[in-house]
Length: 75
Length: 170
Image (cartoon, rainbow over all chains, first blue to last red; front, side, top):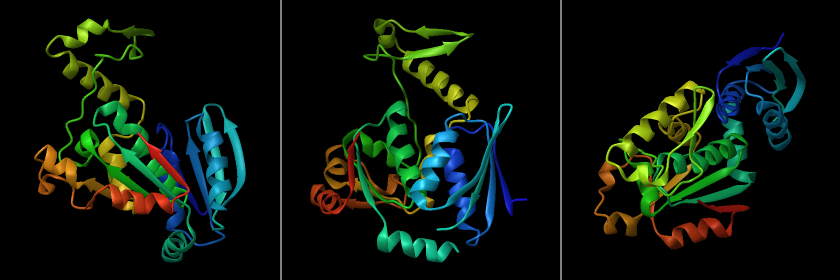
């Protein structure tokens, strides 16, 4: 289980990223954030976000129309 | 924690500037989307608002979009796309109608409003500079602008641009 869950379903670019960043800011290193999104662009965007910020994209899956990511706060 | 993340962003961050020159609803999006996303990715962002772009800093935004002179504007409607003949854009009321349609579409598709993105930019410490010359030229008052802006000129942007990794003009 992730430490926190962000429901970003129905939101479009760049809101899932902005809300994920805000959530991560309130967490400690090592904690995990689960993000649920319906934006197909979020697949490429969360990979890029984690690559650029040094956070770890530890899980990624698609369940129907819902994209699920787990980000571990590292940076 | 939030604090040490902020400190890191200040000391070691990449920098970006965006010159914002346009004040219509459609053209307000690219600078605010990129500025807020860059800030979320720990980039130190400065936005410089000049000419019509300065309208994006007004406390009360009344942004509009016009089909006039924009042959690429084609709105989804009942599974089809509707594009307006350029001439129609000249008819009084068409700009307001197109603006309402666009705002409804933005809401329906879960796209942020410009007000929301601007608020996100303020909260993520994006530096916003209003152009002094434009204030003078169009007789705009700084008190009509949001409080979080600084006022400066071309040299202020240059000083930021020279130490930035990315400089964009929109």
